[in-house]
Image 1 (cartoon, helix red, strand yellow):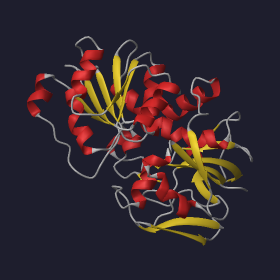
Image 2 (cartoon, one colour):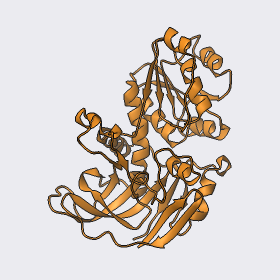
Image 3 (spheres, helix red, strand yellow):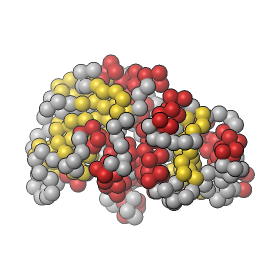
Length: 340
């Protein structure tokens, strides 16, 4: 079957791989229909992705169609359209026992630690499939991205009426922005790219947007009558932005790092202690956030129409993927579509 794998940084290879075979107990065989291309894929292509080994079949943001199920699988019929929760936990470590499988000590993520969805068909655990009859494959491929943003908002414990700043308006940041607004928060948006700031204003209706810069703390205070936001969600994965994040947060507030990078994060301890800030990491998402996003899409509360700006296919991804990293390309979300 037609398959693409990342052999080494900078080199994607298209080849014919073996069919996955019949599903075993608790498994489903799926036809991959849509794959969201995300920062993880781009960073892996350029050799900048932590927790990554080569060679690897990329693809973890998946909209799939069920074509066979194994013994003991209930509630999934042939032809069901599903999103895939791509995080495979061990079930026995401390976070798994505490109900936090998204940060399992032995976590394997499709397309990162084990082979993912850039192929025509694959086997997946049936309990990782989230069926919704009213959503298309492209929408289903966006659920994972939006779920990460929703998880960051849940980690921060965002409440109605508080002021939140989202730094970094890529898909993850925009997902966090939508989730925070759904909870009734007032959201401010920050990015270095004017095009993304315009997108936040024109498409998402964010009234207060700010271009990143050294005087950002002062500009936020001016906009908030001398106050600072009570929560900062940094989705940039950029060290300078992450270093600055605590300075943007009001005393007693929370800073959530949603993006990650390979190096260290450094900020003044005196500021951190004086403001008695809470620092949180947010990793992946959970089944609860997948259900939340699916419900929001189905109700219309989450509008996915503006998200997909570019598309590609297996026979073009090697040529197209490097360009998706170029800010000048205007990519918000690219989707790889596979015909049956």
